[in-house]
Image: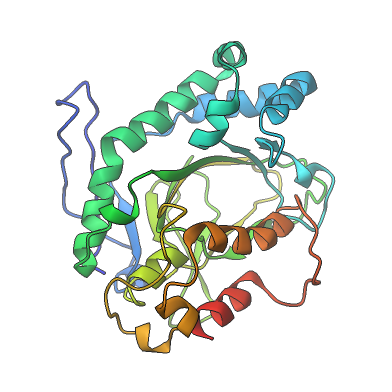
Amino acid sequence: MADIAIHPITAAVVNDALTHVEAAPPLPSQMADMADIALLDSSVKAPFNSIRQLFDHLRASPEAADALNASYPSRGVFKTAALENSTSDQKLTIDISPNRLACIPAEFQSSLSPHGFGEVVKFFSELTTKHLDNMLSMLGAAVGVDLFPLHRSRNLNFRLCDYPPATAAPESENGCGAHRDYGTFSIIFQDGTSGLEIEDPSQPGGWLPVPADKVVMLCGWCAYIVSGGELRAVRHRVRRQPGVRRLSAVLFVAPDLDVALKPITQGKDAARFSSEVMEGKLNVGWFKEFMGKRWRWREGNAQLEDGEQVTQDEEIDRLILG
């Protein structure tokens, strides 16, 4: 995959329909030849002051946190397992998908707006409505496929992450365990604090730090499958610095839930795929739930029935490659 740089200009500068694309900023030398990773030189800035304010308010106001989670009882919105679970990822999260937003009463949303919620939702909305099509176009062009038919309904999630110093394991470096995302791609906004790392594909088990001032796009498992292996699912993690708070904001983009998960181009790895994948017997919705049981366990929000011996990546490898 060619390196991609997307530099959207805000509505105050140009018409909403215009998106400006510039040459990619120089990649760190160790990442220069790596596919499926793009550092985005973007004028779109995550509202980290509002994100910090929202986390602080929900932690200081248990009633507001409980009401927010009650609006979406199946999975919750504000997740704080790291405050009590020393073996989980040591982070707090706020998940704001379109489905969750639709379930949060307008009056309650308004009550949270003075605490940053309104700015966060505005950012999420502008990012997806003004710039998502451009990102899909450029990613599809990199491998010669049209990704739009797979993404008609906008299967999205927007996640805010807080890595506070005071958790159940304050000295732990595990902010977010090593994993690959399930979807097509993820866009990660960082607050300038280091910690995000990607695995070096030439040295499995070796980790490369992502510049803390960059917005980064990483491909996930769905991209790997639909591209026949041309797009690699990028393994990544977050390392904590004890005593240092870190914030990030992540947009997850995946194919529609009813899309059959199979290659739409004969990439380099397609011949290795299992018959279930090649014949389109699995759809994206099933795959998301299959992966979800392990990521929820890693984050401390669910229990596993089959033990902890098999990692999420090993389980997905078996599913895809047979």
